Length: 333
Image (tube, rainbow, N blue to C red; front, side, top):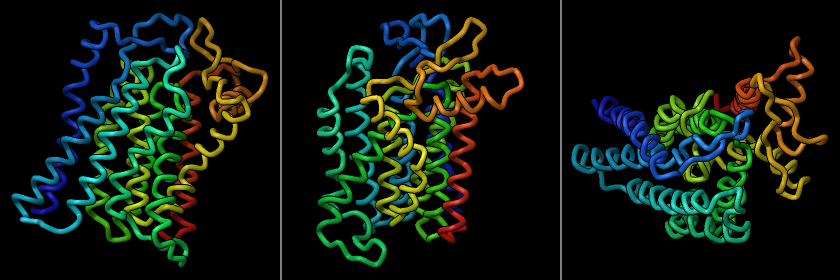
């Protein structure tokens, strides 16, 4: 009975996002919250923006239903509820920051890098003040250094770099599903079933969002969703003592960050769209993992024609391989 009740929270998250998203798409177009689909040849501003707002809403409602069940059905009064509210608080803060950045508009410069880092740092405070997680890493007890240094570094790192590997229909959502799904499995196998469920609640919302964001997308996620996925990954890793696992899962994002830094964080990850829907490299050099994927696919595909969904599939495949290798070598599965 317990598992049935709790599994219901995952369904709540999924259906809230699935049913509300069409309303968001229509309203976003009515008020002019529309963006260009950059990998399309005809870049008309007809894509509903900031759709990740609804994915975050679905996640939050799912979590609140979980808290309600624990409180009123199972009469729970343990410290887990405090940790869940810390996750919720961080998620609220970072989603707000992402939405503000969306409204400022990345093509107009958005918020400055310094402003983003400072504001995202505030999102780490709820996890810091409850001294979340285990201060021992690799057998070394970091004491106060953990909440004061490691937690904010983890939050800022995961939140901001997750935003780098983006810009292709379905990419951000599918990456979030893969990484959070893997962290949910790792948490469950290590005995943190409640943490696993919190991760799955966001996974369910992302699956519903993907229905509208898969190629060809009807809605784009925006920073409100990429920041939110990043903070959830950081929170699950910190509370589940899975910091090293999460860092290894983030290898594609580490590569992306290095390549973005090569271009001074000013080069775009998009391809150069052709009238037939295929993509060419936008630059002579690689400034993102997406560019590497484009280059490799052009070499191995007989037609030499690469489409947006091909790039997403290859990057997701790379992520799956990394996840499986990490879980195996860390003896989690």
